[in-house]
Length: 623
Image (cartoon, rainbow, N blue to C red; front, side, top):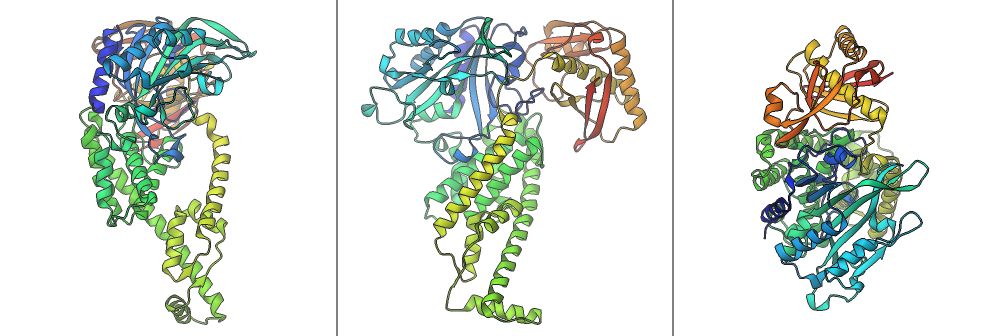
């Protein structure tokens, strides 16, 4: 069964279980400051997991495209991917543990025909905050999972949330499948054994963690599940790794066929897998509804890192004309996924143009790195010659003699210099060492040099992660009163921009924290101070007018016909919530909002700047 059939079967199964099918949300999340990318299907459903009513009811399901960068160092192994698709089903205060577990088991064993004897599960063991999850444990036992295959694990393994210091959280139960020889499946389950692969996770949000640190039962507990498409497709297609499944292998094969040398080492295999993963992810980021371009901040920085890492590995594989190779790989990704994600085809020229521009830019950067290496070789040659050249011609002669000498010159590598080249110029250490060796330099203990480099790199990563882990952590965004007020203010700002600046203005994205709102909109020039003042005054006029904020469920086509604004390019379900602020603003939105504009305070624009070509960004606060 290929990935496409798996997704279709999953959605049909849960539709029969009274779930409404919803579209995949964009990869760039809206109004969630806790993450740069959508890392799970729950992100677009934040308001409903926090108590908002979903316009389609209390049961929904979808296939969500996701990006996760936390495991980027694992990419290249058999199961980790940066971009992946996640199957999910949710209950908003409807069914709970028994039914969720029963449906998971039924889908795996009846719909996918997986052998129950190759399944194992884990449940929350319990601690001082919450008891052992006996409900989940007993439900698995009733379905025939033996006691020895039900691992009782602590919070670090089987607990989700809260996203911040407080909020919804609860135990989860994870489902594993044995990838090894069926005749050698162990009687007992150990999640440290790599042949047990996690395929599905059911999260039971049944507690609210208070600011005092107590775990109080929620009045309406929720179910949030996730199952990786690629991992399950790997099992169904009886493959040993995700790069062999039918939706990824054509990309892998294309890159492999570009390699001139057919002597594939372990390093070459890893490089091909990394390029496959990173360029697939890059195409989806660029082709997203809220697609970004490579930059040095936020999502653009991650995109740039993925593209440049791909380029470095293409160099390591000695693939000529890297820009052409990347274009061909991107076209293959688009061809494979365009039917399911038509935005990729619609944005094909943009995607390839951005990849080629970034490739050209990074190729020039690597050229700088090569020039710095040449300077190092030159200084080494002069040092060993014992001469003091008086002209450039003498320098050339010294370097020439150095390179054609029958004796190889030993160079004790300063690992910090190697790392600085990598940090400042993007020069992979393998490329630097190879370049030195091509100039008649012998690197003693090359393995030791690489080990020291990797140690330095890990130390650097550890420091970086500590500073960024809050930003990359997945979870529910803050829906406190400050965020709710600012969220409502974005509606007023959106309409004020349309009335003051241009009726053609549409939202292109937003990000809200308890401190400020950030709002992106389509416009091709800087706003004047007078225009900014008029926008502020119009927003504050509506706040002072004490306008009521109301919501209504309606068909999306009716909402649009009534003039309700929606984010440009975003796909909405058939039924949506429409929030109206008096007669001033009407928008399709998921909430949350205040009840009346008088709750907002004074609106102030702090900054207006360019965000991307043809896109402006406003940062504002409520005082």
